[in-house]
Image 1 (cartoon, rainbow, N blue to C red):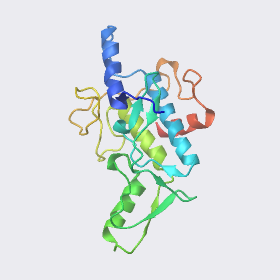
Image 2: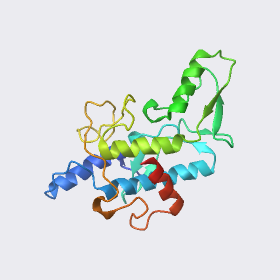
Image 3: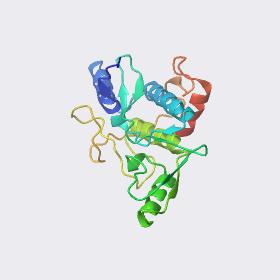
Length: 208
């Protein structure tokens, strides 16, 4: 039995802005609580994968779905890979390091460059140990600010413009606003309606 997940994270954010505007609030930012709750949901999913030695490798707004009860759920495991105990994988030419360059950790992108310059017979050590934390931080910074946290990285954000509910890429359509501080709305990542487990909150605080 499968659960119907009607909207991507980007589509949910557009709907949330519309709800705020319909209520008479012309908002340049999503409420900090909204961002923190989605971060915690995604972190739980990533932690579950890590407990089973799996890395998603393609975390982006199109690959996070929002259920009817507001939960954010990971989707599209087509590029997921099982890693060794040290979080690494050996890859050769022709094997992809992941699906979305913008959300791959710098050391993973560096490994991709090394793979491209090696022979087909030579395996390259690809370290995914911090990939999930990096991808979560990028995704939630994009949700909170509309921008990638590292200048020079491409961005996959398209949240406030129209469309079919999917983030389609490109900085031209980004929504730009400030990153909420820890004091905004009195909400911390570890205090989201009782939904945060302690170790998950640590991951989110590290990543966001």
